[in-house]
Amino acid sequence: MTTHPLLAEAVAGFSALFEEARVAGEPDPTAMTVATAGLDARPSARTVLLKAHDARGFVFYTHLDGRKGRELQANPHAALLFHWPRVRNGVQVRVEGAVEIVSDAEADAYFASRPRVSQLGAWASLQSETLESREAFEQRLSQVEQRFDGREVPRPPRWTGLRVRPEKIEFWYGADFRLHERWLYESDRAGDWSKRMLYP
Ligand SMILES: Cc1cc2nc3c(=O)[nH]c(=O)nc-3n(C[C@H](O)[C@H](O)[C@H](O)COP(=O)(O)O)c2cc1C
Image (cartoon, rainbow, N blue to C red):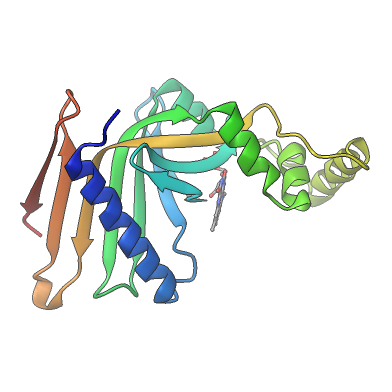
């Protein structure tokens, strides 16, 4: 499938700002807020790390059994938010779209690239369930260490990547005297993209 030129432009714009954020010394340019809502329509938000992005979408990794995983399985739509105060006069990027699980091959490749302690942590964590004590988690960790002693740690079946396929990408550029600039790239249902400015 060919990428619509306006989507390509938006993704290239994102990549340029992402690189500027790194050069500007943002503490972690990959940190983003991901907002979800289950079928009760109550929003929830948390920080995750962006691990890949291209015209197909924005990928983060998580446990499908945590709250966001459960909400996204019930209602596969998310909003992402980046804020890079050190870029230009401050930049915000908002991305909204449908969410899909990445392929097993993609998730396996990313999991294999992680440090072993993180891999073990992914097995030990019962994400978002009640944890009785810190010791209980340490105990689970040492059980997992024994289980995988001397061999590669496979990806836990419920731990995977989620790709937010953009339907809207908005860039907010800070400016003096509130003359902020907002550019919205938006796709219609047929996948045709448009671009317009919004009042700040
Ligand atoms: C800087 C930072 C980065 C994080 N990165 C991730 C991540 O990439 N994936 C993830 O599942 N949780 C990440 N977390 C933890 C989440 O914010 C959240 O606590 C956890 O995923 C449980 O969320 P849930 O109960 O809504 O599913 C990160 C937290 C912080 C503060």
